[in-house]
Structure formats: structure tokens, C-alpha cells
Image (tube, rainbow, N blue to C red):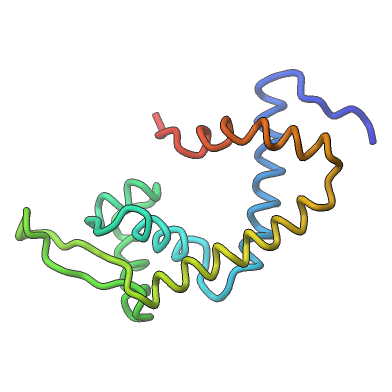
Length: 146
């Protein structure tokens, strides 16, 4: 295999974009039923607890109308519930139902299993590199858009 070590931020960003995108698509395919946008919103609600739809849209980097449609779909599937926001009578809070929690944990487990299978195919030094890079990748995933 040729040396593909990126020599610039631009090359690194292209390589990471390709690798992360492809790995993510493979893990999404291992999930069940829900599309990426729906599952991502559901997982964010699960992690954050009750949240206002506008705040959720902001965290998910989608428009308010897109989030409205996503939440409608999730509610129709019985995966979320809505309740009035006690601190602001004009707003609602969305929460994950028991079925929604099951869907998040089930999809997460299926994806983790697939990723474990893929990781087992790497060389020990490649695994060590990923282990060393994990804090930076976690930080990258949580940096707010500026």
C-alpha cells in the first residue's frame, strides 16, 4: 500500500472526511429502520433529557421545519413524547419514550458490534493509532460550529 500520510490540513480533512463518512455509512446500514436524521435526533434527546425542539434543531444543525417533521415522525412511531415546558408556557419539551430508548440502545449496539468486527481486522499498530487519536476525534465531534 502506498504511503498516504497527509502532509497538510487540507489532505488530512479530505482523508478523514472520506474515512469517517464511509465508516458512518457502514454503521448506519447496520442499524435498524430509522434513518440517520431520525436516529441522530432521538439519540440527542436520549442523551440530553427533555429538550425544546428549537434547541434540538440547533444541536442537530438542521432547520426548525426539518426538526418539526422529524419530531412528528418520531412521535407517530411512539419514540418520543411532548409535554409543556413548565418554565415557558409557549414551548414544549420532547422526551424519549421507553420504546425510543430501546431503539437508541439497539441501534447503538448493532453499530458498535459492526465496528468491533471491523476493528478486529486492523493491525495492532493501526488499533494503537486509533486509540491514541480517539480523544482528538471525540473533541472534533463536539466542537461547535463557528
